[in-house]
Amino acid sequence: MRIGILTVRSRAGEEGGAERFFAGLHRGFVDAGFAADLVAIPSDESTFEAIEETYLRCYDFDASAFDAVVSTKAPTYLVRHPNHVCYLVHTIRVFYDMFDSAFEGAGRRVQAQRRLVQRLDTLALSRPRTRSVFAIGHEVARRLDRHNGIEATVLHPPVGLDALHAGPFGDYVLLPGRLHRWKRVQLAIAAMRHVARPLRLLIAGSGEDEDALRASAAADERIVFLGRVPDDELVELYANALAIAFVPLREDYGYVTVEAFRSGKPVVTCTDSGEAALLVEHERTGLVVAPDARTIASAFERLHDDRGLAHALGAAAHARERTIRWDRVVPILSSALGARSIA
Image (cartoon, rainbow, N blue to C red; front, side):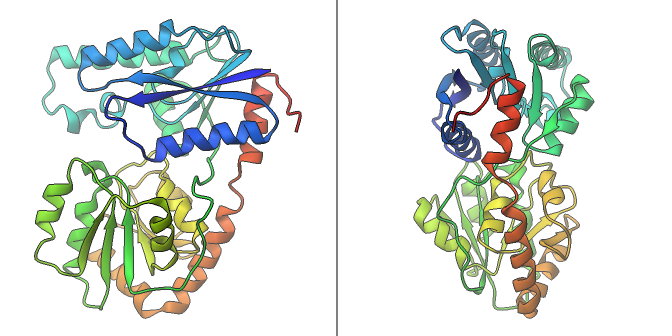
């Protein structure tokens, strides 16, 4: 059986968690003995007209060369194939949970656009067009149920950085990832104003909000922007951190959490951070606190002052990450496709 894994390639050519997910899913199928191909469909979300073109591009995509297809990120699930399952990364969030913040005071035209997108998504992800729907996390599954009335089975994807390893507990908190307002990096920066311990905040990543974030942190020498770092450097940053800060708003999944776990580090996240707040067990694999600068600062200081706690949380986090494996995910997906591994 030849399996096509349908992904998207953004106009900006960005690489992040979704791209790690695509590569890992492909490798998981190949390691299980399947003939699997990654197919990247060009995607543009810069305007609604561009989004419509991307939807049509996915709908018109000729998948007849494959015996089965696995769609992933919106709108690849519009593919027409009789043997299709979706392993959903997410729908276009500005037309879902982030609509009000993205389109404040939206008029009738934008409201109609939202209804159209949700209607198309619902039709595409419903039977018989899609045999089964899986989601990378409970946050995605809940959103799909709330807006589209579709149930999805949650399958957490493993990390994409195999070289991640545990190391000593250093004098800094690491915050890796895209510098975008939904990641709420500003919240961690604000927290540092209340930290009275000799701790640094290292921010690794780039994004559209980088200039504004750098400006807001310019007066604090303890906050260091590293820019986008190569994977080998990122691995060492994880390994030598005291803890990992990950405080987004309603995150779909967040590879940062499981990468921190693989590195044996506790995660400081927030109660409204979506999947991260579910993956991190408070006072077992990290600290789940209110999305408040002072509260986050207290969490940083607590881990600094109690290294025994930091070690214990990190050890439990590492054990938790070992249960998230592709050889548990792929058999479920392939079974839904009526396929069996030959590995």
